[in-house]
Amino acid sequence: MRAIVISQPGGPEVLHIAEVADPVPGTGEVVVDVVAAGLNRADALQRMGGYPPPPGAPPYLGLECSGRISELGPDVHGWQVGDQVCALLAGGGYAERVAVPQSQLLPVPDGVSLTEAASLPEVACTVNSTVFGQAGLAAGETFLVHGGAGGIGTFAIQLAKARGAVVFCTAGSEPKLDRCRDLGADVAISYSQDDFVAATLTSSGGHGADVILDIMGAPYLSRNLAALATGGRLVVISTRGGAHAELDLGVAMRKRIAIFASTLRARPLDEKTAIVAAVRDQVWPLVATGQIKPVIWRSLPLAEAAQAHRLLDEGSHIGKILLLP
Image (cartoon, rainbow, N blue to C red):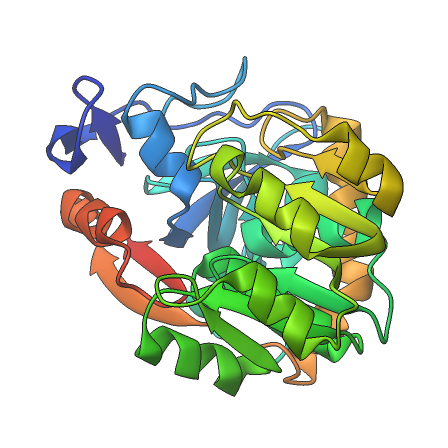
């Protein structure tokens, strides 16, 4: 089969298409013929040598895909050859075929095309397990998501709004801010022009955000604490701006703040199984009724993976970028 390989750590130019061995399904696994694969920031980190795949995972990029089951391994139950699925992966989505544990498969939601479904598994599992699982965002609470126009952000806005939260977000340009509002954001803040702490406090009547979903890490830590309400919860899922920062424990104690940090890729199979099952039960009905829609910026052929990563690195996209084998 064809897959995208990394010649050496570096920029998008290190991505090349090559012939590699076909995957063989292990016990409890299926092989999916990939129709589309979603791009994620973690893919760019792996490309640069900073986020190696966990043991046993394919060496190729790609943390989510959609396609059709073409082969069943031993002890697979409830799935058949020909089923249309999307999947959460530990790697390997940038390829024509990938082996997937059956517990990380999801049916394609009603009202979503097979291609569009590739944009959903990683963001749905990330947002549902952190914002609602760890931080316990509840209806009526105020939620702030940084990077509201990205893949995580566009999904988080919709899911939080569908569950009754008041949704704030940050983004870097007027078109992105407008799109965030279209998706349901009650307050959209320009991080390039405005102080998001002041804007959050003003727009919430001084209350602050009950939950913040952060992708920046170190440079936002102190400001996130300032923007949180008493009893607020900070969820850090990426350290794009840096991993080391000083924490004012006095502020955290006075406000009774809880800080959660999470990654998804390296979690053990039983934890991923529970996360995927929760998405199927709790999130997929909202997608099927149209309360959450895939947000896709561009779809490019697999052979143009380097160009897709250039778009990802530039950061001008809104929503997800897909590769089509």
